[in-house]
Length: 367
Image 1 (cartoon, rainbow, N blue to C red):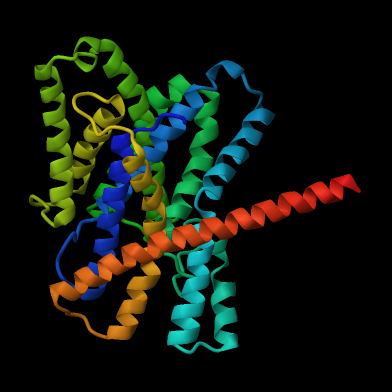
Image 2 (tube, rainbow, N blue to C red; image 1 turned 180 degrees about the horizontal axis):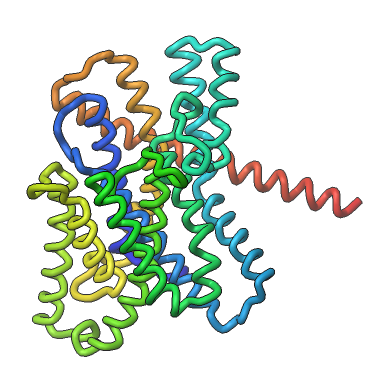
């Protein structure tokens, strides 16, 4: 099997759990991971890094403009395919369980939800309108912003990799983050309209571009400082590990709720970028690639997508704002287990549909 980055897979899982806790905190006000939105920055950066890694392998192909356009659609489509089955099932659950069963939505109201939710279904939530009165998926704005940002940045990177990753993208990141920081007092704004873009899309473009730039930065570090990153000496490994743990530590402490004074989000992003770079550079002691980390990486996506419906179900059933910590923990664990089970069910159904389609296609071609 193709080798994966065990540390990034583990962190995917960790930040998915932080997002889940953050959203339950929104419902029940138990003051844990109030700044957990920094998890989204991690996912944007990783998406940008992996995009650059993919493009780097294609550099010697000298693609024409038509081929770049075709490859952009293929790449974006593959990204959508990786999560859309979970996304669609989450929408169905939101409609059936929460709106129809628990809240008794009529056929007319259900149809209204579907019609108003077309931007979510088309993953254009951050392009057309951010209307949560339509269909709902936890953090659907993130998925929409990621897809649109990749569609914008990927062909630029494909056309001029070195210029983009080393010059253009750092400029884009700097100016967009500065704009968000100065106009919103935070880089983590989402639904504000700036006259041309939603701030959530600007955030995605800035941080995915940053992730792509980190790829070139890691290449520089591992080449220029090979004596440090390639060293097997304990002192060198401990030094790099200490920096990485410190940066992740500051990020997670901030996610927990400590702002360290002022609008700290831009500083947290800086520490997170250093830590992500060291994780991809595999400097120091790392979490290895194994069955456990691969599994944690796999379940992080369904946890991220499915947890939202169950926090609203829980809130609808309890109807309270403050509940004992033990009950919150039970709900979080239950949501985690249900999300994983839904992953297996969705994968089973998706594979069944795919096999049926392939069989039907083969039958038609045979005629």
